Amino acid sequence: MMYLIFRFIDSSKIYSLFFVFSLSLFFGGIMDFSGILLLITIPSANELKMFVVESKAGAIACMLFALLFLGTWPAFLTLLERRGRLPQHTYLDYSITNLLAAVFIALTFGEIGKNTLEKPNFTLQLTQLKDNWPTVLFAMGGGVFLSLGNLATQYALALVGLSLTEVITASITVVIGTTINYFLDDKINKAEILFSGVACFLIAVCLGSAVHSSNAADNKAKIKSLQSDHKPRIDATYTSTSTETFTEKGTKDLENGNGAKAGTAHFLVEIENRRAIKVFGKSTLIGLAITFFAGCCFSLFSPAFNLASNDQWHTLKKGVPNLVVYTAFFYFSISCFVIAIILNINFLYRPVLGLPRSSFKAYLGDWNGRGWALMAGLLCGFGNGLQFMGGQAAGYAAADAVQALPLVSTFWGVLLFGEYRKSSRRTYILLISMLLMFIVAVAILMASSGHRK
Image 1: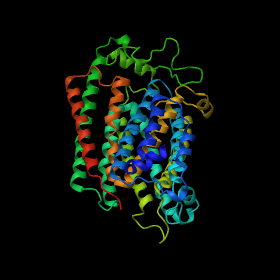
Image 2: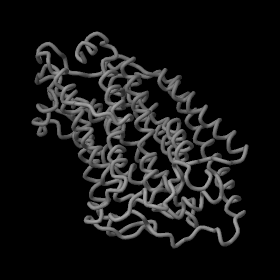
Image 3: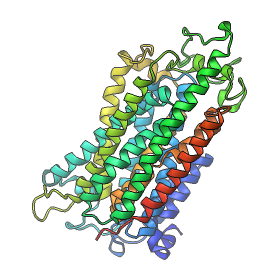
Image 4: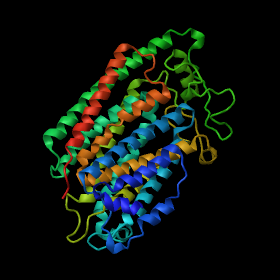
């Protein structure tokens, strides 16, 4: 049945499989993916071409799913940090499933279709490393940039907040990354439309900074209204240990509204007492500096991947095929995984931002919230894969529309974490203006989609 759907709707053949997969992710259903794989591989290899997204409609579908996935996974990391789980533990879990998502995509979509020397599938191209190693290095370089950006993001989320972190990193990515991709893709996107969208992102980041400034002033006023005995305890203990759980008796679940009322000063204090990274008393400039560093890293990973899959700099010898998107994504994810593991194991023993020292043994025994961390890795992995699949068809500059993550992350920030609750009217006006500008930016960037020949 899945095969028939793909053959019947050629221009949007990717929709069905990822729709089924996303349902299983969000509704927790149990699904036999081996059955799906069997249905996909029923036709003989000679009957199918390499499975790639070729139409503009299919590319836009990939971008929309990527926007949903990439805007959701940071909310899971924020959830765990606010519940006291050490970010080093969370990111190690996240890294595992992020790599598994790439392997899943490579072994399914990357193996569909006829295998030729000119258009090799995933496994054949793995054996051609001695010929295509220059573009493999580009792919792995992109993975390094993404890993460093994600690592910085997990700390920026605590210091700056979910919404503003996504606003700044997404806007830097679009302004720098989209410009680079536009020229790498030989200007297949409509410049007058594309850069109008980039301008909207610039306006959005200015509005986002104003939102953060206004909301910070609101929170400061709330804290000052408390009596001295209600001020946050700086010596609050950490809860991410193998012997404690998130549902411990007497522990209030802030995300479900069982603690202090969202938006109040008591709510802010309870969050501070429970979270892993203590933010009261820390300079906002530190958080903003980390956020801008993450944005610069994010702005470079997509152009590096573009070079890996299209070889615009002609680094390959004549006759050597370009890396297919699935092979490039595999190498990309391998380097992302290696960097993440090395840095986070180091942070276990040499923590930053006042976090407590941990160990690999403590990490292995910390099952509190591990499911959320693993889910975050899957969402990020599939989101990146979809972004690259759409970018290969419609241009990586247009695919940067998925960087409008605040549309999704702000929703989770308000719904789960009480961000902007009981804020001033000025904050609400700026927030709504920011979100509207992102909606306009996404629409314009998608409208600039071209078609790669």
